[in-house]
Image (cartoon, rainbow, N blue to C red; front, side, top):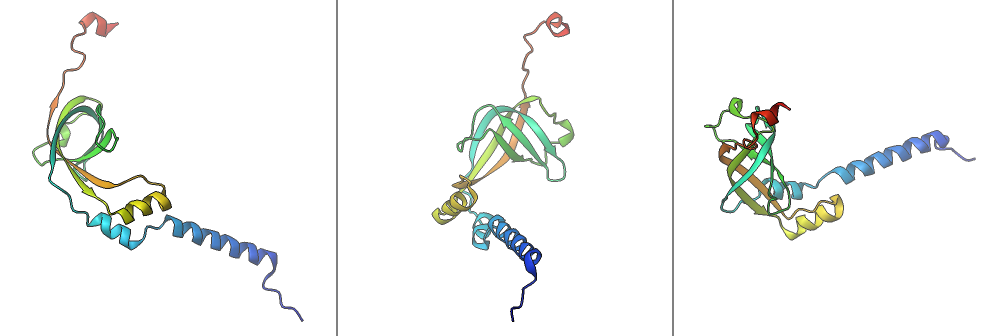
Length: 152
């Protein structure tokens, strides 16, 4: 006498569950990687001055996303900056060109974490960066145009 384990429908359900579990495991980041990233030790700040513009303002977090004209050390042009308390969010304008003076802090990751991110997550990352805005100045871009040129 043969006992069936629920037939084809049950097997399909089990296979779907297994696939979901495998996908979930692939998405999960191991605790040791999370611990290293959250406990990263930042080096001394490097003061930088770059022109760019504000992409987004995050009032709840007191941060801004900026698009910089020159790329950063790791190749990116978009960075999120922490704002000091003396800069009022209401005074900032998205899409307006500013000169940003900010500190860049870098925390290198271990070889083991770098390899894990590269192999398992296909992420090229060897360090974590933090950016702290010190000051900004509105740049007068395009002021060389005459009023007639602007109207047309």
